[in-house]
Length: 161
Picture 1: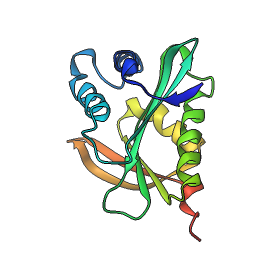
Picture 2: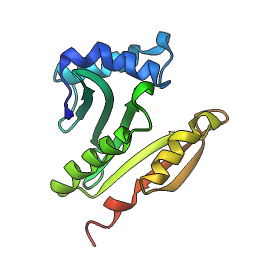
Picture 3: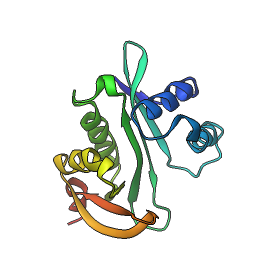
Picture 4: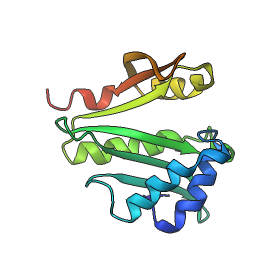
């Protein structure tokens, strides 16, 4: 079941992000701060966290927010599924949920950034399977030797034509 994230989900979502390999266990401070800022009302309007749960436990999460200086353009900042729940369509369901929420409110673009490192091959394959196309590659974006790839949703690209 996909639902809005609650403050009570924070600890489980940080653990989920670690289990999914998005963050080393000793580098979750930034994620914890973003969650705290979100629930504390310290982020700009429009930021959204959603949680997929199974038997009352979070098994997936997505976080997206508007690009402040662009017309109806959004960023998907995070999507993660616990390894025990991967390859069941949960990531695709979360992504479609985000896209449908944005489309139903008249939004125009959804952008996703991924690392160019080989360890992100599965993530890039996931987005390609979901219809996302590489729009740009920024050399050394994350760090020297780690390109950033910006992908765009084919579904949302044509909503204003």
